[in-house]
View 1 (cartoon, helix red, strand yellow):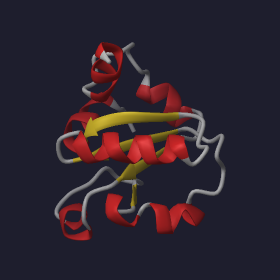
View 2: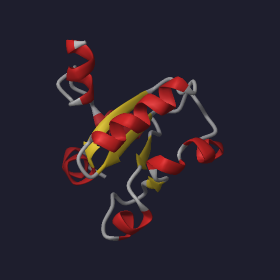
View 3: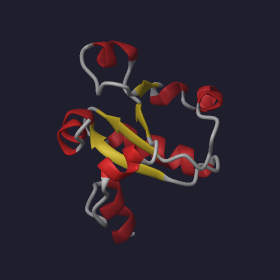
Length: 106
């Protein structure tokens, strides 16, 4: 339980987001379309978390790294759980999009 909470809130092992992006990772922003239009990481894909299951066809390669992000990290944690339950193998919760943007060097 404690390890699960650590992972959800980003206290697990440090993730090298730049390396994941170099490996072709998808940055998946799961906020609403309106939130996304108000600002987002360049090159990210927007699929709101409440439509994620019906849009899995947009994420064809289940072995390609995916970094989820949202406004605070809660919806991106939900998105990570959904993706993992649907067989996506390399999924990381990047947390808040603006914080994630500061961690990557595109």
